[in-house]
Amino acid sequence: MNRRKFLQQSSLSAAVLSVTPSAFASENKPASFTIGFLSDVHVKPTETAEAGMRKAYRHVNGLKPSVDFIINGGDAIMDALNASKEKVQKQWDVWNKVLTDENKLPIYHCIGNHDAWGWQMTDVEVKNDPLYDKKWVLQQHNMKERFYSFAHKNWKFIVLDSAQENNGGYIARIDEPQFAWLENELKQTDAAQHICIVSHIPIVSFCSAVFYDKNEPNGDWKISRALLHVDSRRLTDLFKNHQSIRCCLSGHIHMQDMVEYRGINYYCNGAVSGDWWNGPYKGFEPSYALFEFDSDGKVTRTMMNYGNI
Ligand SMILES: [Zn+2]
Image 1: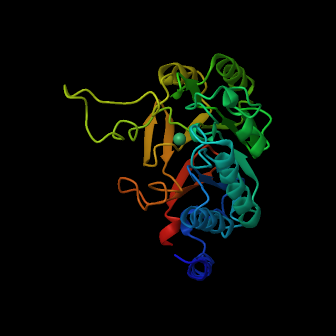
Image 2: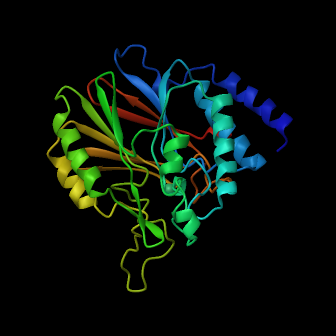
């Protein structure tokens, strides 16, 4: 699609959006609020990827003032795991350019596996580079720590760092210092606050089980350590002791589900890039999620197939 056509279609989308969708209208519920959860943008220096990211961010910004802030669910760029410094810089350049142009909402970032630099590279120079690992993504997102929390109205958001380097690849879990921090963070949370936990990779998800098209030859399910937190038991055991946790939000799988487990709703929220910008992935349109958080702890999700609106 050329740029002129894209801009024409975008202004059409903005016109359609001037009618507030009832699913997230919240005027008569004081203290409730709505956020945009945009995950797996996987932007790269191509016309399709840049235009897609522009459309998604323009779309959610068109919903102002109904949206309080955005959470970037991770995998902002196409891939830094196995890409030269020059290529990674070009991807971050597009990310920053589009955000500067299109986003006026506050944004909180979660780190995705593809945002970490050099894990799949053997080059000693890369490993010794000051930007190796997550230092580059922290710098680009202006983040002080890999994991952190923030409060909004009577909610607390805890943002985790899901992907850890693992023998030239990655594994989905939180490391020991992060677990200790999380334990303490949950303990310290005011009883009046509801909690939402964000992780790039799902902690509980059915999408992770159906990501591969087939089971093992003997019928066993096949779930990669890269697709579902391998410390799910430990995390859900910890969550059991904290009744204020209402929901967990993730991306990574490019598919959508909602699983309720032990009183917590786990939402896997598709991908802005869909099938990495080649349309829908396994039937899931390129999308982002709108979440409405009520003051009483209720959470409502509306998926936004921004490409078709
Ligand atoms: Zn990912």
